[in-house]
Image (cartoon, rainbow, N blue to C red; front, side):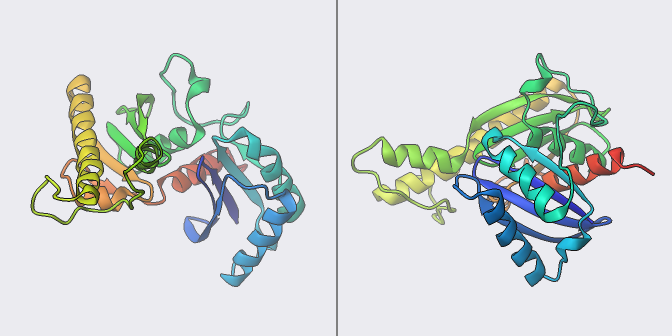
Amino acid sequence: MLLAIDCGNTNIVFAVFDGETLRGQWRAATKTDKTADEFGIWLTQVMTHDNVMPAEIDAVILASVVPARNFDLTKLCEKYFKCAARFIGEPGLDLGTEIKIDNPREVGADRVVNVIAAHALFQGPSIVIDFGTATTFDVVDGNGAYCGGVIAPGINLSMEALHMATALLPRIPVQHPGNATVVGTSTVAAMTSGVFWGYVGLIEGLVARIKAERGVPMRVLATGGLAPLFAKATTVIDQIEEVLTLRGLLAVHRRNSKP
């Protein structure tokens, strides 16, 4: 079985695939002082609890945008799963896609595997919106090549900045305003509306501009924890793929596995 690890700025997602079947996934905070042993003990326990046997793991693939966590994750794989982790972006790993940007090394590993998974799901030009710590819009052409994208502040990051930079505005959750009107009649209602509908406007505006710039029909896929919330509020998102990054990691592993 394959252990796929997606190390993002906020969470590390661990997932196990048995063939094409996702057997389970578990999350841990990225910003932590946990050592490889602490990660290993926790992960093997939650896997066993969900009837996934750690001894059955025979390969690990890892996408990381947090270099400071790579050492502990590498040691975790070696000690607890007896596997050497393969990292997205390492020399010799065949991604099966062309990265058409000025400096291919700049693009995040998660964004690369997202477009790989998007092309595998939809054989045509597409836009992948990932609602993570940052909200990213990545463009895939008809051949599956990564053509660049847009990076905007994530909604939670924006809300935290709004709270921290003001004396009177409270910290509020991300949610649909629930009003029939956009204009709020209280501070919290005004903030909720501004954040939510402002992000809907960001999504719709950027998708429209990308499509106009590319000049071809494009399918829009969304992933990340907040994808379902915003997909309900706009018609520009065609499809939600909650485990898109993990599916991309699986695709790269399959491409590089020995017969």
